[in-house]
Amino acid sequence: MSLRKPWKPLTKAVVRSVPDRYGVYELGDGDGNSLGVDAGPLQDDLKEALAYGDGAQVRWQVATSREHAESMLEDHR
Image (cartoon, rainbow, N blue to C red):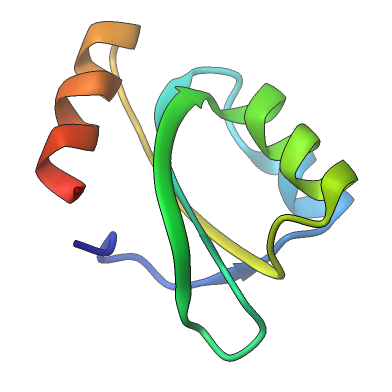
């Protein structure tokens, strides 16, 4: 299940604006189609996604802890 947030472009500026916390994120292609949902440290994971060109767009939801992020991920798979 997709996150219910608007897409943002996966750019350096957007990645810098992401909180340095755990969360759930969804990567999308240029047409807004979901490429996948995952959980982890948001800034680190999105920097890696940007470096590898894993998507054109992103949306995320911040969690209170790693365990919370993993629990949220189960709700979105």
